[in-house]
Length: 80
Image (tube, rainbow, N blue to C red; front, side, top):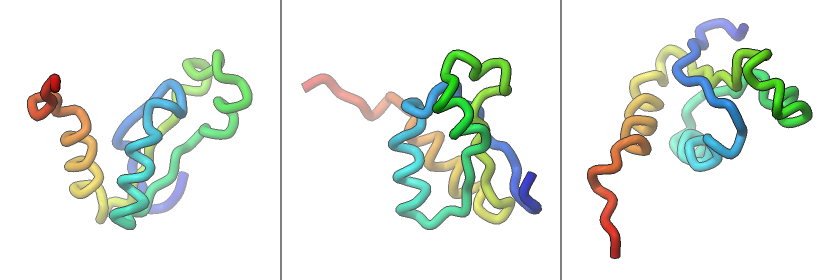
């Protein structure tokens, strides 16, 4: 585990966080996805590895959590 990094989310497959990764990089939030390579090679073993863990530097957690909350908020979605 990296020093001063905390797990704030767990995903089953890489496709679940593609947009999130882009937004984190865009905001220069220090992060790492643990187990990403192993699950990319063995996708059906995700649960055995405990999923793909998003770890964020402690100082960046509030910003990262805000991005995640906005992605999870569907109240602003409208059918056009």
